Length: 91
Image 1 (cartoon, rainbow, N blue to C red):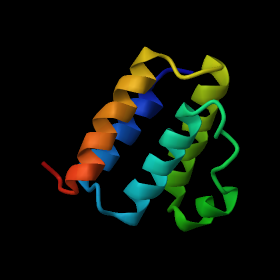
Image 2 (image 1 turned 45 degrees about the vertical axis):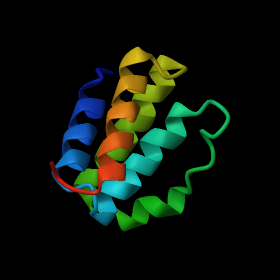
Image 3 (image 1 turned 90 degrees about the vertical axis):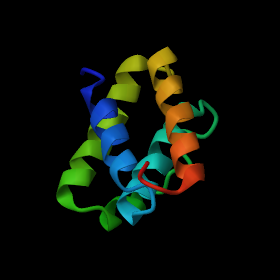
Image 4 (image 1 turned 45 degrees about the horizontal axis):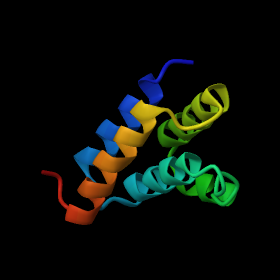
């Protein structure tokens, strides 16, 4: 599994950081980045995603399962998204 899913998720979130879809994907990425919190994302939230975003969420879960723990690239993506979500705009 390539980290392409992470790149696609970051791009989707950055396009519209205020959208519900973006916030759900962001929440999943943040949860998967925390070794102690990996089971805290409610799978019921996946129902709130459209099929394309849900497939992306599954790919992110597969990527983290393959990695075993967040790598440097994942951590950089989290930091980038943290800043974008805090800013709350698409810039």
